[in-house]
Image 1 (cartoon, one colour):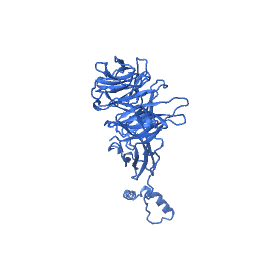
Image 2: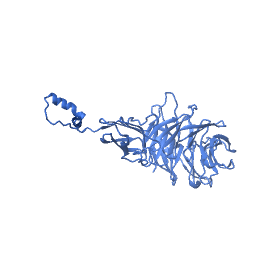
Image 3: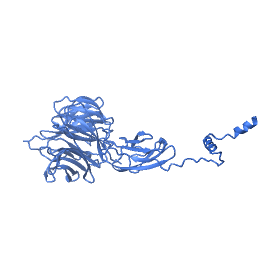
Image 4: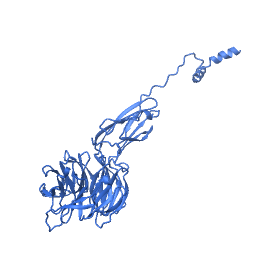
Length: 476
């Protein structure tokens, strides 16, 4: 009996066969062999759907960066994050991160069975131009799919505004960054604004001790000082962020420029008489000047200057006389007066000198036409003009790569919208323009410009705030 029971137990049917045997028994105990087939393979692999660029203005979250969103369905299984890869099929700054298979220009914001969200990072911006991303995903069942998204990036994008807390009715005069790109300095009203060029926050607001508006600023980083024109020349401590006094003997100064032959000398563009002053920043005193003839019936104004290597030439903007005065500051000789551009006389309130000293780019604030001029410093003649006659150019700056110019303007009349321009130097053409929105009845003045030394950010002084633009440009 026990043996019979054990034999029977050994022949018990598998649990999954019990329902089938019962059906057979009910049908009259048919003896046909019953087999179970596995389900057919899933012939519908997951589908990938590119949902972005999700914002055609490329100004997501007010940061000017690009988001790429990818959605998928996973045919019953879950997406395995370890098998999700993204790679660029177009030019990128940086190399692939082999630990995550993501190019460094992207940060993973979300990765799950619903989809993938990538965000461009400031640390490794995508360059402008056409770019392609290839996305590969596998689910837990081993189904794989791959697709690409192709998009065009803007050359640059407005990012954000650094608020200073100052009243915005007054326009700013100058803005610079230190050589490392960590600190920035803006002159506005009677305040020197110090900001962090990395975190984009205000570090200090230093009040001037004078009664005039602050104008040009130059940095003496080895000695830890900033020199600011305020009629007098004032000195501020870069480490203490404090006013340290004024330079004796200076007066009526607007434009400033560092000597490139003697690190102890700062040149001052002095108004009224239009002199060129010489300041010794070690002795902390005005030591010399170069008298310059001018129509004495008019007060001269020298808003900006630029110096070539070894101080072979110094270029001075001349508001009353007009044009650009070229002098040799070593021999105190006038070399030339560049007084015409295009169809006649002109005025320029802002310069940008190329790194090789061959080109001085001018914002033609007034002239026929208004726009941007390229002055050849070898011949001291204007060789080309980009006509932007509908606007009044205010500030101009050259990118660290030397391939782009950023120009700020104000409209000639209320019927023309305000625009800022990004210009391709080689093609001598506008790459992109930026609207300058403003509330009705508000006077908006976009003025001086500074590129961060790595070229990725552009700082524009507007009234008494700082607008930040992202610059998508390969510096190599």
